[in-house]
Length: 220
Image (tube, rainbow, N blue to C red; front, side):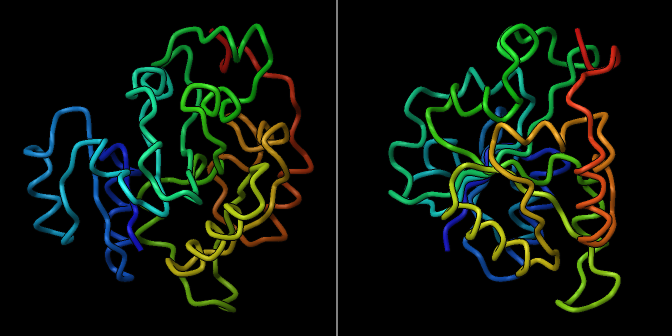
């Protein structure tokens, strides 16, 4: 299946590596242009692309760019994707370290991915946001392996959740349903599940232990 990846940083690059390894047709874009992606393309067989070309007819689109950059994506970017496209958002809000204050998140109380949905005009599945990039390459295990890592996913789009769950299984991870988008604060930075590499039971316990209050570290 065609997968468009917007962003070729640590997460985007390693997702490109894993998704091409299991046979998907990956088209990857970044802010600096396709010509800068030649090494990744030669390594993986992925197709370097503009953002517009990466998402065209894609059945899955991964948005993996700094949160502050999401609002700068081309308007209507997803209009040419497949009608039933599943959009994965890996983003996190780092107000002090990178993003500055985003009013919709801090003042209006939107979850990070709910804010992203409003910028791109499409529902998303929050996934991979608390995953260390190297774990995408180092942690995959076959289904049923007791060492298999589970990752939380949150969305209001049930069909997209099923697509992402299947995709995670393909690349060697279990998925834990973390609820709808308004529940996705449970996997934001500063919560117990953030950065956790463990099984589904531990992930569920971590989600249950989360507090909706943002600590000072995660506010502008």
